[in-house]
Length: 390
Ligand code: NIG
Ligand code: FE
Image (cartoon, rainbow, N blue to C red; front, side, top):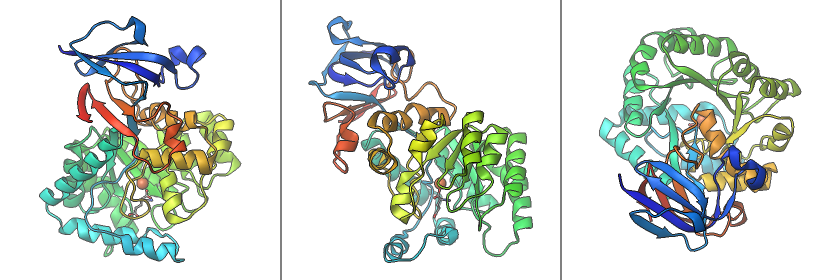
């Protein structure tokens, strides 16, 4: 198996809890090296002690971080909603109604068109340092269109999520649609999905419907996650905590009881600050959540409606500037905790045996991700040990 040593790393972010005592939350190592063997990390330590390898790369004093783990995206869609964004920026509120516009365009697209669109977005993400991602369905909303959306998503990631319960499509009643989602649609989707998700919100699905849909998914072997408390207060976060879900996403409007439940359950609150940026809503209280002992992840929510960014660096910058996370907390949330939100411990951490998913930054430290907002800092990406960017 071929080996590569990346040496001359001015600052290495490992996220390795074993290095927390000296290296803090990010398990920092200065003047570091990493050895990659095949698809895995083989060695991490001081550059002066690095073993030899077949290929040598000199980082020239720059920083290396784990690849971003984007645990929430909706990449399978067709069409454009920039007019809706433009209207929002001149005073229209965000509503979930725009989802139906994308559904019509997605249904009209061929599998080839959907696949090439997802491929373009995945490449865009990779070029910005994302090496693991979750992709949801949710713009098909028929048995056929949800199944083919997931089949497309599964070509790009193992972390695929069935979101038939995104909104109730036109021409059906909520009762009939929940029966479809928990019956034939779930049966068609399950072979292509690892997760099941529900948009639990006024105007989408209520907490009883969400409970029934998640239970049906669990019976088909799908693990649950939830969109909740995005547009207003509600019971979705409570449900996620009660069920012990890996993650509940958005968490923009939380009561004190919601925060306690998150802390006690260990369910990760995945915050999606690109959404608040792009909908001009208030940002979630990341600082309050972290100080209360809640685990917080950051993800892009890349989708054509509420937030069409693929940039985890932007999410980090917003989390630091607008949500009072420290740069270290934000990077940890976008890597190791993003991985935990997907029940994964093989990514988001650079330690022997973990996936060799690394990003070389054109910067001396991870702080530059927030310090230099909007600046493309990714100089190189290795995914499963292979150089894919740079
Ligand atoms: O996560 N909130 C629900 N779904 C997406 C937005 C979907 C859309 O507007 O197209 C979200 O924000
Ligand atoms: Fe979403």
